[in-house]
Image (cartoon, rainbow, N blue to C red; front, side, top):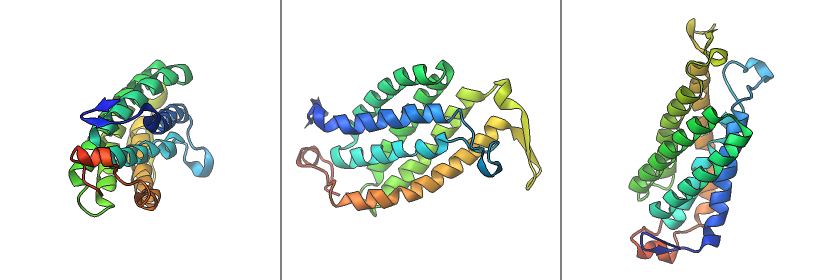
Length: 209
């Protein structure tokens, strides 16, 4: 397979595509289940803990093969995940997830590639945070705005602020993603020495770092 002048075998892309598909499909199911423990049912869903892994997969693919190949992985993972999500979740959630996924992941690729020459942690962290912010806003508004079950008012005692349930879920979902983006620097940093940009990507102008 030739992508923007980079020759990559389909077998090399199989692992990131499958990983991306699994993360998104699992998140689309888990976002329907609030975290019941510790009184978090009105602020968090289990999907908040799985979805950030998509940014780790995306950044590692971008580092290894460059942005053009990373975009192809996003497109393949998106298509396969949407099909699975329609079966595992609802069509509305699948559509919202697909839209948010594409926008957020493509933004992550662009930010990562622009900053990849800086300190090793800056590109993945900035890309994940910016991509997550837009992804969260798009997903929760498309998936739950106007849904009576997700729009009843919730007041947070510590602040006195009252918002629709889905708005509160979106806010705390993003906070979890911020934490996960910081934690993801650990496996990213550990894999940097092993998962170096390969010769084909360097020949296409991707820096060896």
